[in-house]
Image (tube, rainbow, N blue to C red; front, side, top):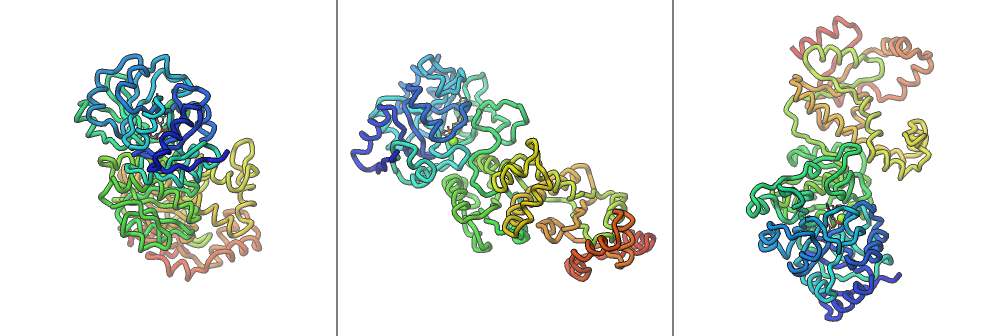
Length: 530
Ligand code: TXA
Ligand code: MG
């Protein structure tokens, strides 16, 4: 199919688009939020084409777009008495309202739900086209399902060129994130998706308004969302996204510590500190963040980055919508660098006795975090696993579960693949580690100790206030690992030889604990951590 490109300011565009829609075709059109992929909402076959073009899951209902409030009544069982108040204040504009549907609305639009979502967009081109064709238009965002929504016509074509009849280019979308979805199906109005209209604005009109818990957190397994669109992952670029909480200095230190090629997704004026970056808005300007968020996420992919770290926005006003979209594009990977207890890194060569030192520190009220364990847990994360299988192929799975050996064979075969593995797993390992630090904090631990043999190969030093290195003479270490792991002298020496030398560890550490003799070691620990 050839996709017709129409300019919104071309006088013929409205008629052409309306005709295609009346004939059951698909037209991507500009709205003030994001581009929508429209079809006649009253024609199930036309609606089915939307799902096919986007690759949209069948259980995710569509929003019906109208151009006049009179169009609501035929679509709903009964016009809710709160609707006129909302329409008066927010329509046309970025608010979608959910009410019980009438028989006129096909099940194809509502994915079988008894309710229908309705909105009146304010973009002049969208309004003109709806009026001209005289039909309610079902329109989801005009992106391939799962990808960031398009805020400009170019990104519509990037996903859907050749799959839809036409696109109407009306320039950049004003709001940039999708409409607020508000359910009036129950007694208390519930925000199912935050958007251009803020909770406070809605409360001014309605009084009590709830925010669905799905706005902030992933659904548990088997849990059914109130709004099917709020499923696990969404709005995601190909790069693995992680949201970073904390001030700019912490963010910068964190990014500087990454040893893979990452992209900083930061605020205006901050990009100059990074080699690869996208600035997505002003620090204290949620509206500008909303406007550029999705295009910024797409730019990350255009730059060819495997991982992106995003500065966390404020959640006031429209910021809530920005945060909500980021959480989903990051598959809920958030790292909060605001830590209130001291954090120590604990490392050293094999056989030096880190574990013994760790146990002593634990007796002193510190929490020791085992990163080996977390590294294993990281690859169980569904987002991590799906990224790894997308890259390495299904061969790394056995009975649907990760086959660690197969992964190691593939990932360590060459440097590029190892780099990719790290770019996907490291942020998750760091996230899990920081999560443990925060739970230690809550549990009243005096400090957190990150036990990591490969601390310096990871980004973890940047969350450590100080790094402790445990040392022991070579013959001691050899004796210990032979005894502990039942190795031959040859194998033990090989393992020791594969590590960096002691001087390297020492030069990068703040506290050195010599562990040739248990009592002498204890004395040092007691002195340092008295
Ligand atoms: O700003 C917008 O709302 C854009 C523009 C194009 O209008 N449209 C948009 O549509 O974002 P879409 O399909 O990407 O998102 C619609 C959201 C989904 O989360 C869907 O699950 C939810 O609205 N939704 C639609 N009908 C619903 C219903 N009856 N009950 C609950 N949620 C519903
Ligand atoms: Mg969408």
